[in-house]
Amino acid sequence: MTFKKYIGDKRFYRHALAIAIPIMIQNGITNFVNMLDNIMVGRLGTEAMSGVSIVNQFTFIFNLLVFGAVSAAGIFTAQYHGSGDTDGVRHTFRFKFLTCLVVGVVGTLLFLLFGGEFIDLFLHTSENSGDLALTRQKGLDYLQLLLIGLLPYALSQLYASTMRETGETVIPMLASVLAVATNFLLNLILIFGYLGAPAMGVAGAAIATTISRFAELLLLVIWAHTHTAKFPYLRGAYHSFRVPRALAVRIALKGLPLMANEFFWSLAITMRNQCYSVRGLDAVAALNISSTLQNVISVAYMALGNALAIIVGRELGAGELKQAKDTANKMIAFIVFAAAAFALLFAGGAFFFPQIYNTTDAVRDLATYMMLICAAALPFYAYSFAAYYTLRSGGQVMITVLMDSVFMWVVVIPVCALLAYFTSWSIHVIFVICQATEIVKCLLAHFLLKKGTWVRKLVGNEAQN
Image (cartoon, rainbow, N blue to C red):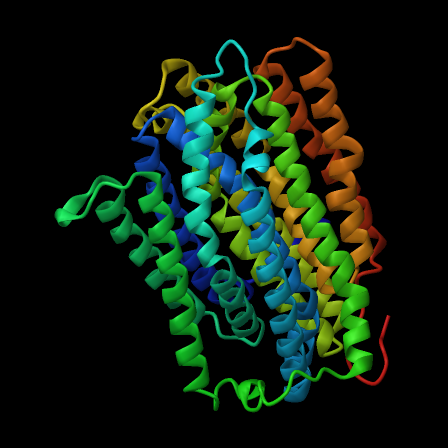
């Protein structure tokens, strides 16, 4: 039966979960503690919560740029590791280091110079606008201290991503646990002034986040460089920053479009949310509440997506093309099923989670509505996410750009902008229409997967199709 090609045996799922569960734990703990942090800030009031939420819209773009920087070379890292080429892994590590350094420095400078202007984009006078001046000041207080941790975050992703791509998922998980534990404990102390510390509000939240990023980087660097037998690519990694020209060009050809995609996709998400903000500060606050729990719920299918990229990337690197295609089919089905199961939890949480926040009833009701809509869309998000990682594992960067950032700018943003700026429709109608565009994206992803052009080997003497 055709249906059977989407179902694996016990060994298949054990292998997939062995890779996914550490990533799931790492990201799950991170997002869970981020949720607790968000709740703590939410206890400070709507303006504080909204100011921090607006800043996080822009740091989200930075984080995705870092992801693009490490993922670009990571395509080759996984396949070099699969073919046993340590020198190749070392060269991709150097390439990642240089790109993370550039992204970290440039991102910090941009936020330092234009942070206030970025925040102003989300502040609109409306019937439910709230105190916009206070919201802006809270956002600036948070951003100015958060900047110190941007470069350490980028370098942490350099080490963590390379470890995962070469089969080590536990150490990045432990580093993340340390970071989130540090962040959580310092938040308790610095936001509310426990243990005799001053109550610093959103500034305390920023300080806690910054210190936690230094702690994560320190653990990763110390562990990696004291266990070079396990990470041989680190031997001599910093003796020079030379990357073979031919490899640098190949990574750039694949990587620059990928980085551009991550940038324009994350910018599109931010602009979509900016369109929602036209309907007032209530929309900003409600979206913050909804997305906070959604980030926790989405951890399962996102970790499985990372596992898909690692497993399929290795099989492609080893030349096992038919096996890679079979694995992708089974993993995509597994990911969508997991998302559907967690969507039920998300829908249940919609009726009590918003009540935790110190905000108005209107914000809570709107957050519940948004969460129910997102719960219904979660399996569609998961399918698109799995398709993205499948296509990327075979180096189909331009295709992933098409279904990711190009789709956002050609379809989603025009729809959202048209509804927000040229109609008087409520945020309820605008939100559901914009979320429904994910169905169109799934149809595009299904077509691209069926073509099968992603099933190919990228490393070795010559590519295999």
